[in-house]
Image 1 (spheres, rainbow, N blue to C red):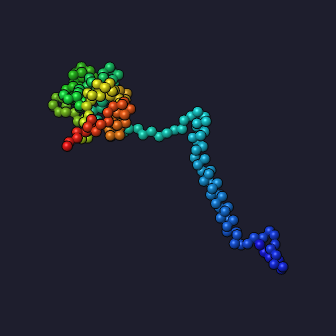
Image 2: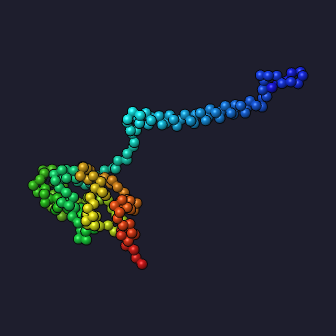
Image 3: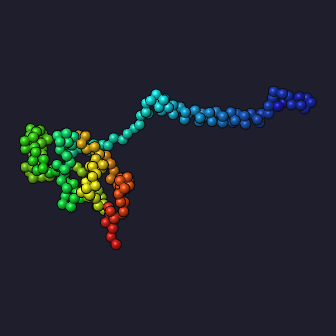
Length: 203
């Protein structure tokens, strides 16, 4: 405040030194208000959607389809009444499910869709005695022991690990075959999670 001739401070005036502190206080209040408003604005669309009965849109990662040397639709074959075991034969030990060869395919396709370009390509592989270079989607590490037979005996369905294959025209890797995936599934089914169940432990 300013002083009169008697040394008294006049009302309505302020020390210049206090101006900066009051400006800083006003700036802080403005900053606090902005920080409080921005989150509310961001949440507003979701809140409106929930109040209107509509769930907010969520981004879902869609597995990228894996292209095969010959187009093959599992959906068409399943719709025709075929099951997994019709084409995927268990190995001698029951651990590995086989991928059908050209000979396996031509058992049916000697008379079915013989004019199809895809069947023509399969027939060429059979005639030349060459394996079809199918691209494997799921590959287990060498240090993992896995038996399809044991899982089938436990009444587990193929979809548990491979996804909804019966509704897919083109397959993609729908699950990651990592330890966490297996342990989570075993725990949910109250199955053993002992180390030596899936790994060969040497002394």
